[in-house]
Length: 573
Image (cartoon, rainbow, N blue to C red; front, side, top):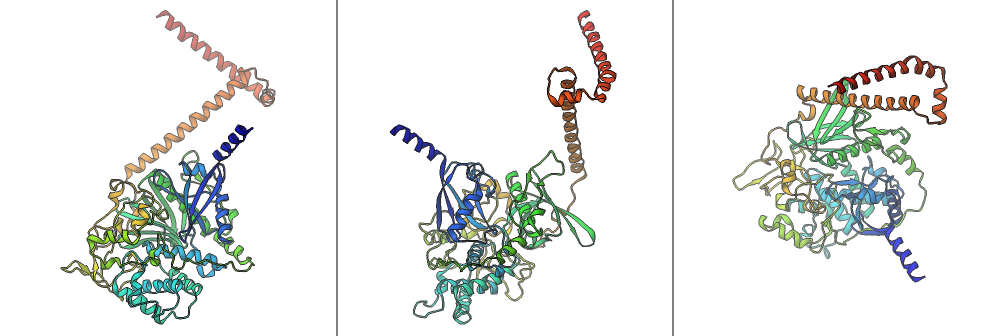
């Protein structure tokens, strides 16, 4: 009896596994999941734990054994998607950024989106000029520590917080000035709301960069935002396509295509190349989901999408959630008492150390910054919360990209750059947040084409070796105009011919296969003695009898005659 109970308990343990989900405030939610549980079950558990109703904006991200990041599909089994052994570690993140965060119905939803955008700001994905950066950081201060108190906040207190990958003393003073004078009396929820309204106006709001190359081999970063498809290249945004202009997304191997119709029926095709086929497929799936979520009027319009023009080739994928308009309509129907929000306050954060005290990184000599950064983040494990979609090369903070805009950067003998806050515009430059105005140390090497990222996010997933993706980096001193041709450069004639020939060959193979199947069916109908109902019905039709006696039997006799003739020749030899 005891052995039977023990064997039963062992079988139950084998059917269950542990899942740890890191939430946006860096707390962790651990639960036991059945082995065949689908993603929706885990997501519903997390939303119930957070008391979250407006949950369609969020998703669960994970990293596979090949270091490729994915969004968990809610309609599929968790264990089959993870491709690794339990226990599993995943992250809750904003998957679809609200087009208007201020319009969110509940404060708990706004708070979670606030945490995500604060994370984007720290990791350099949300780009802005210095004045905007100061205001955003001041709102974070007000939300987390409240009103300025001379007794609690000594001179230079803003330098104890790390809001951005890099910033200057002048910016710190500006943040403190705004916090002391302009935000007095604001409650945390008001500061968070104004932070969201400010962030929403920035061009890189909602950007999740995917590293790629254009057809000329120039590095580029593709992203999907609430308003459309974006291509960042060099130090500027080279393409922006609204969702109603994008007609089709395709991929084949590492090649990603975007088809669009712009004004005056101008059709364009953008072509880019991802680092790996897996990264390209993930890019395509993200594009399909974002287009469906933001473009369609209702979820009943969602269709299964193929990655290729040919039905027998490529991947097929279907977005399974609600669309943005339906989410807003559903949110308007929410009627309950606002749930209690447990804000992080001054609890040390593993990924957003704006609430972690320590010396300012920019005041530390270049050779010591990495060591100081480790001391600041002491005891904090590597993150698994990156919004990057593909593995990227790990770099130190001393290598953070601080590019110079063509009209705002000036070289000096001491290796510093001065960027004018008055003339800088985010519409023609893609600079990491924030743009320090004076005494900026130029990096010795640039991050991948100026892509926003940080060391914490890259190291979290066990990034591949430098050789895997080193070819995605370029010289930071290139201040000339970025390549804007992108994927609009037409493929060479030879490549087009090769693709056409391959498509024809595939079609020919499929046709031959279908004919072979039909021949087998015909032989079964005419030569076999199978007494199956549908075969019997076919044999009894006048058309089949006519075909059998007038065409098939003479053809069979002709083949038999030819075979005997060939056999006779072989025997005589």
